[in-house]
Image (cartoon, rainbow, N blue to C red; front, top):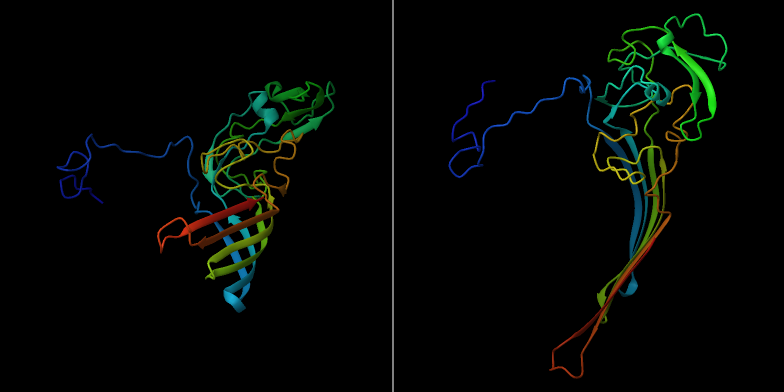
Length: 275
């Protein structure tokens, strides 16, 4: 395809167009988007029942099940202990991160007793971490070494999953709605939602650390490694935006104001949200 840079096709610099020159953007080859990466998506199923009641009242009940099925995130195949020791480097890539992803060459680790003999497969003394300290307390938690491999940590599948978990975000809710259409000088909109949100992946925006950069959060910047220095980062549980009960009530009433001219209305509004 040959682009045509003229006033009919180009806004930049054209009469009535955008001031300034042409800019060209490209993907950073050191942080590639893996071939075959697809957009993320979720599945949602809703089932409900509603009915019209006497005196302009209306009631409905709904069940909502929403589960994330695929995400796009940046990731790197390096563990915290490797990063702290300056080994292998962090080569970032964008991909559909999951437990089956094989995007990079994994360092082959051998755990051994601190101060003990180094496993024979670890022939490079520069790839030995003895001891491995707890980054919070400084206490020794073990020792580890790695087999020599110039491609370790670099892009290129090796037939071994890279060690990431499956992203999980499961939202389930039951909602009761009870409304009254405007009649007899008042109306009401009310609902009560009982819900739970569980998983290990909040979505594009993270409430736990305030990140607002979709698709490039720090969640998958490290693998769990040999000593689980990430703790429960990948454990599934209640997410930060989990709200078990949300109640909304909105009501409106109006009446004639005696002190105002005939035909004038006095309106009263009330809104209440409990979470």
